[in-house]
Length: 195
Image (cartoon, rainbow, N blue to C red):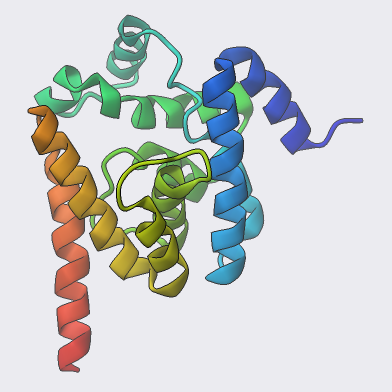
């Protein structure tokens, strides 16, 4: 009899291309390592890491249709920047198609493309694991990998800075949640320093 994780993997492999499936395995393994290191729920990190991109290989018309049917297209930026919609759509698919009911896992999948204010430990782990898994190779990724195991919030700010610069350099629209998430962490760190 297959475990839940094996069933998810089998189904996911059929819905993703080979490169995306390999990336998802890398995110899962990285999330598990970060969860162990930062004393987060390892099982939740494993499932969220594996499923974070479960909607990524859907065509954008199908993604938009699901988003509209479930009322999750909250803004025009998400309509226009298709690269970020797979997070919220992925949370729907994780629940509907993979049987995930844990809200913390679903939320980690939902916001892994934009971030959000007051992110949970699991949400931060999935956001960072997506960027630092072993298959990723971009300027600054090694520094980000080191920071992720030293100080999660410092790594998040660094990741947001890199993401914002990447989006600006592409001339794409920047989602306000990304800016808000970055600012929230900086203000939290500032207020901790004062107390």
